[in-house]
Amino acid sequence: MKRICLFAVLMMLSLPLAAHAAPATHSHAAAAPQPVAASASDVVRNFYATLVDSMKQGDQIGFAGRFKKLDPAVKAAFDMPTMTRFAVGSVWTKATPDEQQQLISAFSDFSTANYASQFKAYNDEQFEVVDEKPSPGGVIVETTLTPKGAAPVALNYMMHKDDKGNYRIVDVYLNGTISQLATRRSEFNAIVDRDGIPALVNSLDEKSKQMGPS
Image 1 (cartoon, rainbow, N blue to C red):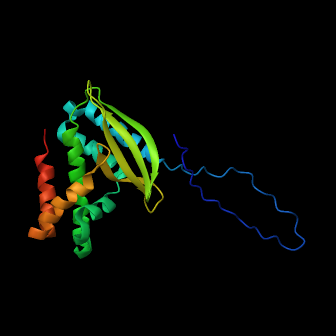
Image 2: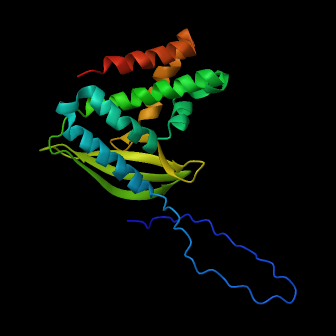
Image 3: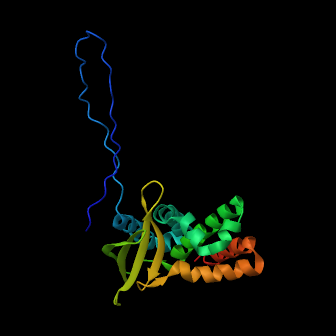
């Protein structure tokens, strides 16, 4: 596994000395430790841990409980603003700031609802991070999902660093090659071309509602 990147801010203090003054006494107090940024692989592992925990409680907490549990994990692991911009394509630049926020919110809820709906219960499924490879603009984290008694399925995550230097997911490749965002883009563009941006927001909200409760 690749070594985790360490982001630290080095601070230097310059203390002026008055003329003829005795040498200053320097403090030896230890500086507060800086937080360690998670590696791309660890971001995926953390998301998988929450997903599996949600699945294990799936029957008990239902769709609403799974959604509530997964929502912060999805928002932490996935770069939803970037994913939304890519998913809606050129129409993004034509949207007002308010419409852009509505699209991000609707797409985020839609994504969380998908996970809450598709992963309802745990039946010894195994989620494994296999490798991490550099890719133009970021890294690819290769993983497998192995259902009980079935062959593993490749789920690869394209990741980049956000404006805070943290790795976030920007696309998911089913079977290692099928981009989920590219698939969504043609569907979303058709709705916008036909009925406009508000129709896409309404469509995403409606799809989210249809996936639950279960």
